[in-house]
Amino acid sequence: MDEHSRECLAIRVKRKLNPTEVIDALTDLFILRGVPGCTRSDNGPEFIAEAVRDWIVEFH
Image (cartoon, rainbow, N blue to C red; front, side, top):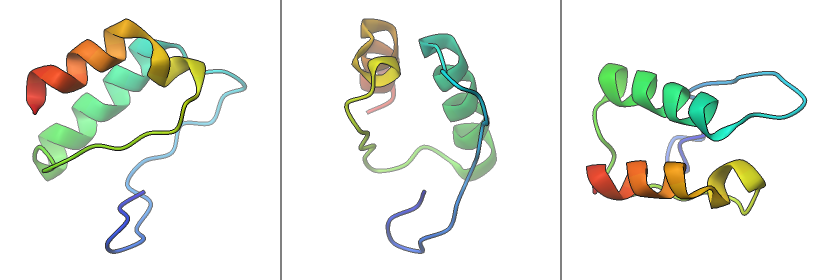
């Protein structure tokens, strides 16, 4: 969700997302909308994963 516009930029419905699925969703958004100035996430296990953290750091 874009915190400024409150627009839902993507939705992936599944009981549990793994880090690869999160990275895929973010990659799609970055391609379509450009790389954001900052990224904030909750503390769900998919965001705590080192793979997602490392991937986000690569773009910021």
